[in-house]
Image (tube, rainbow, N blue to C red; front, side, top):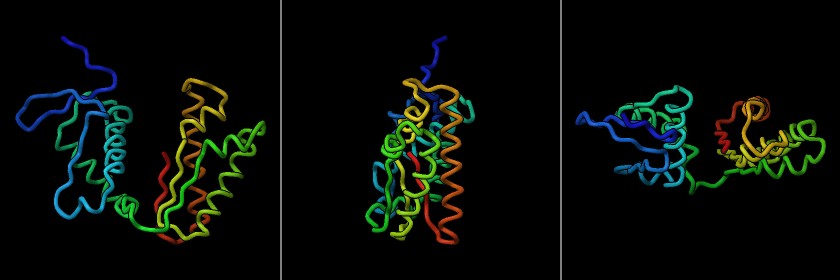
Amino acid sequence: MITLASDCLLFQMPGGESMPFSAEMISVELLGGTSAWFDGEFVSHAAHAVFHFFKHEQGRQTVSVGEFAEALEKALRGLAPAALSSQPGRGEGDLCRLASESGEGGELFFFPRLRDELRRQLQESPRVVRFHGLRGCVKQLAGVRRWTPRCRTLEERIVEYMRQCLGAEAGRKELALIIE
């Protein structure tokens, strides 16, 4: 038996056959009016996230095309307001820059800086707040080159902290937080 590559999932096709695909091999086409709502890069990121969910969070080796499509649809429906890339009012922050600016203080200075950055972005009344560079930021704060279990813990702490800050600072405003 041939071993499945570590970065692939077996997709069960409607006809019964199975095909291996990596996250990079998945392409998604949107039909009708919905294609105007979504930026192609956004859909690609959403597909990668759904792939990651099945592969790493659920530990699955096989997924049906229908299951994948349903999960992707749920993700896109939940993020539809965030996907409207042509709309104004979208904040963006660089987590790696915040980690660098924290210097030798590391996490002690990083978290207050992160909250200040979130507050600054919320003053502009965005509907979407996006932070990028999470993985690089975590490795920088942890002082490592390779991903470690400590990195995973720190990553979870940062995401949870951002969610709590957003809940406290945004109040009842409807907005989306995207962390990449």
